Image 1 (cartoon, rainbow, N blue to C red):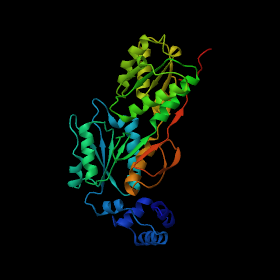
Image 2 (cartoon, rainbow, N blue to C red; image 1 turned 30 degrees about the vertical axis):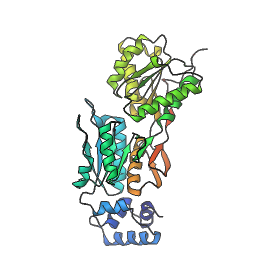
Image 3 (cartoon, helix red, strand yellow; image 1 turned 180 degrees about the vertical axis):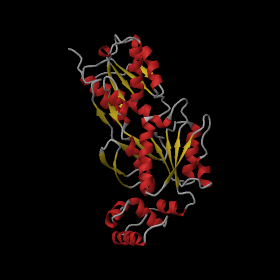
Image 4 (cartoon, helix red, strand yellow; image 1 turned 45 degrees about the vertical axis):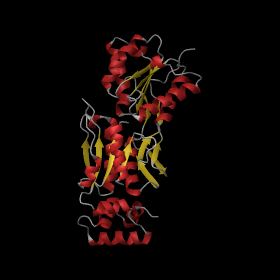
Length: 355
């Protein structure tokens, strides 16, 4: 089956223009409309059922739900800003508007009511926790047949559409890099285990250590909340044990940089730091001193893919370029799609332990 992109290329217009012509949205020049219709007929392109439902609906909105995170500026967080950018880019290509909504502290959003009141036609949920009330709200969505996609969270034994990254493999790569450098006492600063990606990272750490003939030492496990402040707080415990810690792996760059900052506040010289590896490969990783090795996660591409899956159903091909310019074509043939991660090695970890 032909894609909207192929129709756009043949007609010499954008994908958004193809969407507007076929959905009868907005003013379109007659010549442009004719070219799009001819290209569509020639290629046998048929818009997806969801795309047609967007055109018929009263809202034309794609809802994006952001979590409640106390004392955090979500739009300044690399994780959220990159995913929102990817979602917005693909939504624009499809002629859709975004309705961004925030969870309220101590409450679970009534997702089904958003659909019933026709505020949104589909929904992407970011930062969901594995909480029973949250799960029940999503199960209700699923039972009523509303189109939604969960990003960066996995709910086992559920038939939800999900887009995530391979955090098990990303963490395994980080640990194997550190053990290959000769590091044996590796501290791991993780996020809350209510997030499936925190559990995945821990599993990756176990696998990496096992492959190096080592076991997980629970005394070297620390928990933060993915904020820089929690990294600074963890640095107190890490500083007290620097004589026995070779390396620090943190579940995101913010916490890794927080630990670095906290060690400096306690008088630890940069040259005396343990090896560091972070996670996300945010812009801050390149600017850290020393430059921070980090696991690259294609958040922008994840956002684009979530919209593509909602528009096309679960079977298809998403061809995307993330915000750093890295291109990949991802095939998805199931409800859950995992995108690959990549370890980017910089000065913070690129040194071997002296034999």
